[in-house]
Length: 162
Image (cartoon, rainbow, N blue to C red):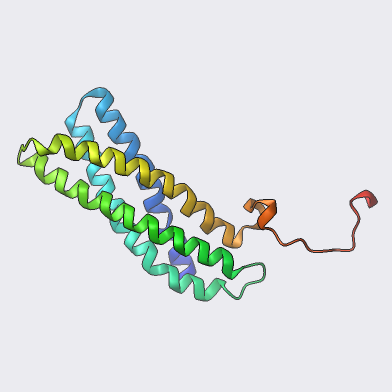
């Protein structure tokens, strides 16, 4: 398994983890169940840890794909910028989740505010996860790039020739 394989394997974990954590936290609020909200905190902590691994494997993946046909340095740079921002926010989410977990187990009143902050950070992380995931996919998947990002290639084939 090379660095690109490993990056592809781990990069989905924080993206999906944020979604699952958000839905779990939302469910905990709706059901008014603290144990469900605590489960969400653990999911966010796990997601933050996997985000570190995904970010660290990005350089190795870049060195493999940057010379592939159709791969643009522009797309790689855009993804790196998005990934760095996402990493910072999800680390903040993971740290806040860890603190909130501590407050909850110590039965401190700060836990209530911690959960609210985690909810806000999870929504921010969720929005960023979409953009970082899309920008990563655009590196090698030309079919998901928008038309204004695609370099048109003249194939010499007219659309009316069909």
